[in-house]
Length: 281
Image 1 (spheres, rainbow, N blue to C red):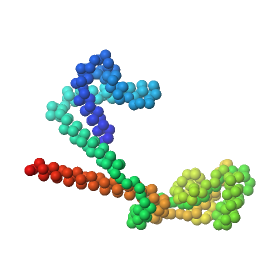
Image 2: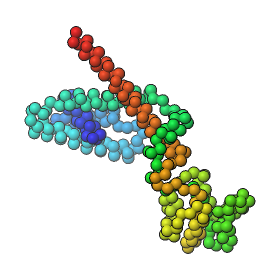
Image 3: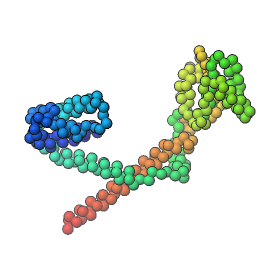
Protein backbone atom coordinates (compact mmCIF):
# COMPACT_ATOMS: atom_id res chain seq x y z
CA UNK A 1 0.00 0.00 0.00
CA UNK A 2 2.85 2.39 0.85
CA UNK A 3 4.47 2.03 -2.57
CA UNK A 4 1.10 2.32 -4.32
CA UNK A 5 0.37 5.62 -2.59
CA UNK A 6 3.82 6.95 -3.42
CA UNK A 7 3.30 5.99 -7.05
CA UNK A 8 -0.05 7.82 -7.08
CA UNK A 9 1.63 10.92 -5.68
CA UNK A 10 4.49 10.70 -8.18
CA UNK A 11 2.07 10.38 -11.09
CA UNK A 12 0.00 13.28 -9.75
CA UNK A 13 3.09 15.50 -9.60
CA UNK A 14 3.88 14.60 -13.16
CA UNK A 15 0.31 15.21 -14.33
CA UNK A 16 0.16 18.63 -12.69
CA UNK A 17 3.58 19.64 -14.01
CA UNK A 18 3.41 18.20 -17.52
CA UNK A 19 2.03 21.37 -19.14
CA UNK A 20 4.90 23.46 -17.86
CA UNK A 21 7.42 20.86 -18.96
CA UNK A 22 6.08 21.05 -22.49
CA UNK A 23 6.90 24.74 -22.68
CA UNK A 24 10.48 24.36 -21.41
CA UNK A 25 13.49 24.58 -23.68
CA UNK A 26 14.12 21.01 -24.91
CA UNK A 27 17.86 21.78 -25.12
CA UNK A 28 17.87 21.45 -21.35
CA UNK A 29 16.20 18.02 -21.51
CA UNK A 30 17.80 14.68 -20.69
CA UNK A 31 15.01 12.55 -22.18
CA UNK A 32 11.60 13.28 -23.64
CA UNK A 33 8.33 11.45 -24.25
CA UNK A 34 5.25 12.54 -26.18
CA UNK A 35 6.19 16.21 -25.99
CA UNK A 36 7.25 16.18 -22.33
CA UNK A 37 10.83 16.67 -21.15
CA UNK A 38 12.86 15.55 -18.16
CA UNK A 39 15.02 18.61 -17.48
CA UNK A 40 18.51 18.81 -16.03
CA UNK A 41 17.28 21.31 -13.44
CA UNK A 42 14.82 18.75 -12.09
CA UNK A 43 17.57 16.15 -11.83
CA UNK A 44 19.84 18.60 -9.99
CA UNK A 45 17.06 19.35 -7.49
CA UNK A 46 16.19 15.73 -6.80
CA UNK A 47 19.51 13.85 -6.81
CA UNK A 48 20.52 12.85 -3.24
CA UNK A 49 23.65 14.52 -1.90
CA UNK A 50 26.81 12.60 -1.01
CA UNK A 51 26.58 9.97 -3.75
CA UNK A 52 29.71 8.72 -5.46
CA UNK A 53 30.05 9.18 -9.21
CA UNK A 54 29.08 5.55 -9.83
CA UNK A 55 26.07 5.75 -7.47
CA UNK A 56 24.99 9.05 -9.08
CA UNK A 57 24.94 7.41 -12.50
CA UNK A 58 22.95 4.46 -11.15
CA UNK A 59 20.47 6.83 -9.47
CA UNK A 60 20.12 8.84 -12.68
CA UNK A 61 19.36 5.73 -14.77
CA UNK A 62 16.77 4.55 -12.24
CA UNK A 63 15.15 7.99 -12.13
CA UNK A 64 14.97 8.22 -15.93
CA UNK A 65 13.33 4.79 -16.11
CA UNK A 66 10.76 5.72 -13.45
CA UNK A 67 10.05 9.07 -15.14
CA UNK A 68 9.50 7.37 -18.49
CA UNK A 69 7.37 4.63 -16.92
CA UNK A 70 5.16 7.22 -15.21
CA UNK A 71 4.62 9.15 -18.43
CA UNK A 72 3.79 6.01 -20.38
CA UNK A 73 1.18 5.14 -17.72
CA UNK A 74 -0.21 8.68 -17.87
CA UNK A 75 -0.41 8.56 -21.66
CA UNK A 76 -2.19 5.21 -21.60
CA UNK A 77 -4.56 6.43 -18.89
CA UNK A 78 -5.47 9.53 -20.91
CA UNK A 79 -6.12 7.48 -24.05
CA UNK A 80 -7.89 4.46 -22.57
CA UNK A 81 -9.68 5.49 -19.36
CA UNK A 82 -13.29 6.69 -19.57
CA UNK A 83 -13.57 10.46 -19.20
CA UNK A 84 -15.40 9.95 -15.91
CA UNK A 85 -12.24 8.45 -14.43
CA UNK A 86 -9.77 11.03 -15.70
CA UNK A 87 -10.60 13.52 -12.99
CA UNK A 88 -8.27 12.34 -10.20
CA UNK A 89 -8.31 15.60 -8.24
CA UNK A 90 -10.74 14.30 -5.54
CA UNK A 91 -8.53 11.23 -5.03
CA UNK A 92 -5.41 13.38 -4.85
CA UNK A 93 -7.04 15.73 -2.33
CA UNK A 94 -8.02 12.78 -0.14
CA UNK A 95 -4.57 11.21 -0.42
CA UNK A 96 -2.92 14.52 0.43
CA UNK A 97 -5.21 14.89 3.45
CA UNK A 98 -4.45 11.33 4.61
CA UNK A 99 -0.71 11.89 4.22
CA UNK A 100 -0.77 15.21 6.08
CA UNK A 101 -2.93 13.74 8.86
CA UNK A 102 -0.46 10.87 9.27
CA UNK A 103 2.47 13.29 9.37
CA UNK A 104 0.72 15.55 11.87
CA UNK A 105 -0.28 12.66 14.14
CA UNK A 106 3.31 11.39 14.14
CA UNK A 107 4.60 14.92 14.83
CA UNK A 108 2.04 15.43 17.62
CA UNK A 109 2.95 12.19 19.40
CA UNK A 110 6.71 12.61 18.93
CA UNK A 111 6.71 16.09 20.43
CA UNK A 112 4.33 15.50 23.31
CA UNK A 113 4.82 11.91 24.45
CA UNK A 114 6.61 11.17 27.71
CA UNK A 115 9.34 8.66 26.85
CA UNK A 116 10.37 7.95 30.45
CA UNK A 117 9.06 4.75 32.05
CA UNK A 118 9.63 4.51 35.78
CA UNK A 119 10.54 1.31 37.68
CA UNK A 120 7.20 1.55 39.52
CA UNK A 121 5.31 1.57 36.19
CA UNK A 122 7.23 -1.52 35.08
CA UNK A 123 6.50 -3.31 38.37
CA UNK A 124 2.80 -2.43 38.17
CA UNK A 125 2.51 -3.59 34.58
CA UNK A 126 4.36 -6.80 35.47
CA UNK A 127 2.07 -7.63 38.38
CA UNK A 128 -1.12 -6.77 36.46
CA UNK A 129 -0.28 -8.59 33.22
CA UNK A 130 1.24 -11.90 34.29
CA UNK A 131 -0.96 -13.83 31.88
CA UNK A 132 0.56 -11.92 28.95
CA UNK A 133 4.12 -12.40 30.17
CA UNK A 134 4.43 -16.15 29.89
CA UNK A 135 7.58 -17.49 28.27
CA UNK A 136 7.16 -19.01 24.83
CA UNK A 137 10.66 -20.52 24.97
CA UNK A 138 12.83 -22.42 27.43
CA UNK A 139 15.19 -19.98 29.12
CA UNK A 140 18.25 -20.87 31.15
CA UNK A 141 21.05 -19.39 33.18
CA UNK A 142 24.20 -21.26 32.25
CA UNK A 143 27.96 -21.43 32.13
CA UNK A 144 29.84 -22.63 29.08
CA UNK A 145 33.48 -23.73 28.88
CA UNK A 146 35.36 -25.03 25.86
CA UNK A 147 38.85 -26.55 26.12
CA UNK A 148 41.15 -27.98 23.45
CA UNK A 149 41.47 -31.76 23.59
CA UNK A 150 45.24 -31.33 23.68
CA UNK A 151 44.91 -29.98 27.26
CA UNK A 152 45.40 -33.11 29.33
CA UNK A 153 43.90 -31.95 32.62
CA UNK A 154 40.70 -30.60 31.07
CA UNK A 155 38.75 -33.12 33.16
CA UNK A 156 39.13 -30.70 36.09
CA UNK A 157 36.55 -28.40 34.47
CA UNK A 158 33.82 -31.01 34.95
CA UNK A 159 34.81 -31.30 38.61
CA UNK A 160 34.92 -27.60 39.42
CA UNK A 161 32.07 -26.33 37.24
CA UNK A 162 29.10 -27.63 39.31
CA UNK A 163 30.81 -27.07 42.66
CA UNK A 164 29.24 -24.53 45.00
CA UNK A 165 32.56 -24.07 46.76
CA UNK A 166 33.89 -20.55 46.34
CA UNK A 167 37.42 -21.96 46.34
CA UNK A 168 36.65 -24.34 43.47
CA UNK A 169 34.99 -21.54 41.52
CA UNK A 170 38.13 -19.44 41.86
CA UNK A 171 40.19 -22.40 40.65
CA UNK A 172 37.85 -22.78 37.68
CA UNK A 173 38.17 -19.12 36.69
CA UNK A 174 41.95 -19.15 37.03
CA UNK A 175 42.18 -22.37 35.02
CA UNK A 176 39.88 -21.10 32.26
CA UNK A 177 41.79 -17.83 32.05
CA UNK A 178 44.97 -19.77 31.31
CA UNK A 179 43.80 -22.81 29.37
CA UNK A 180 40.21 -22.53 28.12
CA UNK A 181 39.36 -21.55 24.59
CA UNK A 182 36.00 -20.18 25.79
CA UNK A 183 34.64 -19.33 29.23
CA UNK A 184 31.24 -17.64 29.27
CA UNK A 185 28.65 -17.26 32.02
CA UNK A 186 26.54 -14.91 29.82
CA UNK A 187 26.86 -12.26 32.54
CA UNK A 188 24.40 -14.17 34.67
CA UNK A 189 21.53 -13.27 32.31
CA UNK A 190 18.74 -15.51 31.02
CA UNK A 191 19.33 -16.88 27.53
CA UNK A 192 17.38 -19.20 25.26
CA UNK A 193 18.20 -22.88 25.60
CA UNK A 194 18.30 -23.04 21.81
CA UNK A 195 21.21 -20.59 21.90
CA UNK A 196 23.26 -23.14 23.85
CA UNK A 197 22.24 -25.85 21.42
CA UNK A 198 23.48 -23.70 18.54
CA UNK A 199 26.80 -23.17 20.30
CA UNK A 200 27.22 -26.90 20.74
CA UNK A 201 25.77 -27.90 17.37
CA UNK A 202 25.96 -31.51 18.57
CA UNK A 203 23.26 -34.17 18.78
CA UNK A 204 24.56 -35.20 22.19
CA UNK A 205 23.59 -31.84 23.66
CA UNK A 206 20.13 -31.81 22.09
CA UNK A 207 19.42 -35.30 23.42
CA UNK A 208 20.78 -34.55 26.90
CA UNK A 209 18.25 -34.24 29.68
CA UNK A 210 18.33 -30.75 31.14
CA UNK A 211 19.15 -31.13 34.82
CA UNK A 212 20.15 -28.30 37.09
CA UNK A 213 23.78 -28.25 38.27
CA UNK A 214 24.67 -31.29 36.18
CA UNK A 215 27.46 -30.89 33.63
CA UNK A 216 26.67 -31.68 30.00
CA UNK A 217 29.86 -32.68 28.23
CA UNK A 218 30.24 -32.74 24.44
CA UNK A 219 33.46 -33.77 22.71
CA UNK A 220 34.28 -33.20 19.06
CA UNK A 221 37.44 -33.65 17.00
CA UNK A 222 39.37 -30.74 18.49
CA UNK A 223 37.65 -29.55 21.65
CA UNK A 224 35.55 -30.59 24.61
CA UNK A 225 32.58 -28.45 25.60
CA UNK A 226 31.16 -28.23 29.12
CA UNK A 227 27.69 -26.80 29.81
CA UNK A 228 26.19 -26.21 33.25
CA UNK A 229 22.51 -25.24 33.58
CA UNK A 230 22.13 -23.22 36.76
CA UNK A 231 18.45 -22.28 36.48
CA UNK A 232 15.63 -22.84 34.01
CA UNK A 233 12.30 -21.28 33.02
CA UNK A 234 10.08 -23.64 31.06
CA UNK A 235 7.56 -22.70 28.37
CA UNK A 236 4.41 -21.25 29.88
CA UNK A 237 6.13 -20.01 33.02
CA UNK A 238 6.15 -16.36 34.03
CA UNK A 239 9.07 -14.44 32.55
CA UNK A 240 11.51 -12.81 34.97
CA UNK A 241 10.86 -9.09 35.22
CA UNK A 242 14.37 -8.20 34.06
CA UNK A 243 14.00 -10.39 30.97
CA UNK A 244 10.53 -9.00 30.21
CA UNK A 245 11.48 -5.36 30.88
CA UNK A 246 12.04 -4.39 27.25
CA UNK A 247 8.69 -5.85 26.19
CA UNK A 248 6.96 -4.13 29.11
CA UNK A 249 8.42 -0.74 28.21
CA UNK A 250 7.34 -1.23 24.58
CA UNK A 251 3.79 -2.11 25.70
CA UNK A 252 3.59 0.93 27.99
CA UNK A 253 4.80 3.25 25.21
CA UNK A 254 2.32 1.78 22.72
CA UNK A 255 -0.50 2.35 25.21
CA UNK A 256 0.61 5.96 25.67
CA UNK A 257 0.68 6.50 21.91
CA UNK A 258 -2.80 5.02 21.55
CA UNK A 259 -4.14 7.30 24.28
CA UNK A 260 -2.51 10.31 22.64
CA UNK A 261 -4.05 9.45 19.27
CA UNK A 262 -7.43 9.17 20.99
CA UNK A 263 -6.84 12.49 22.73
CA UNK A 264 -5.93 14.20 19.45
CA UNK A 265 -8.92 12.68 17.68
CA UNK A 266 -11.24 13.87 20.45
CA UNK A 267 -9.88 17.42 20.20
CA UNK A 268 -10.37 17.43 16.44
CA UNK A 269 -13.90 16.05 16.78
CA UNK A 270 -14.73 18.81 19.25
CA UNK A 271 -13.44 21.39 16.78
CA UNK A 272 -15.54 19.80 14.03
CA UNK A 273 -18.66 20.01 16.20
CA UNK A 274 -18.01 23.67 16.99
CA UNK A 275 -17.51 24.49 13.31
CA UNK A 276 -20.73 22.70 12.37
CA UNK A 277 -22.64 24.66 15.01
CA UNK A 278 -21.22 27.92 13.70
CA UNK A 279 -22.09 27.01 10.12
CA UNK A 280 -25.66 26.15 11.08
CA UNK A 281 -26.29 29.59 12.58
